[in-house]
Length: 140
Image 1 (cartoon, one colour):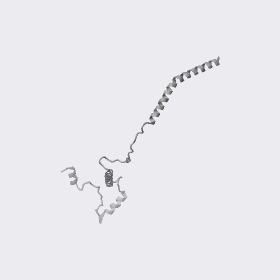
Image 2: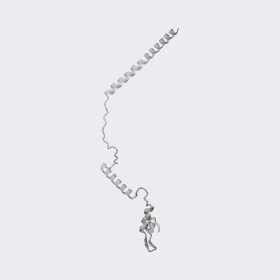
Image 3: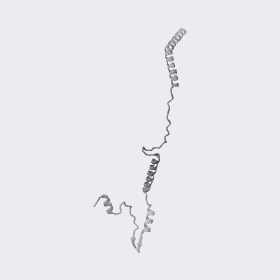
């Protein structure tokens, strides 16, 4: 009984496989013919011609200027920037207290017990006098 059911199952699988192959075979043949025809047609297609353009890499030149003019202008701007940076040094400039006291002692002048010159230092100012400051601010 078991052998008969196995045989029936095998026969059923064979029939199902044959039906599947018979229905899929025409579709597979069509797809194969389509792929082959595309390959044959593309073999005779003309190859597109590309122009080789030489481009300076990582170089920007504005419209209306030549590369030499642009380089000259950049060099001038870089020199101007470097000159401006020298006017304003980076970091906070300070004088150590011990150094400042020694300078102060060196500048002081005495007449006996009386101090004639204190050696005091002033902060730098933008204007030479109060009148120049007032004139710049539009006062009086």
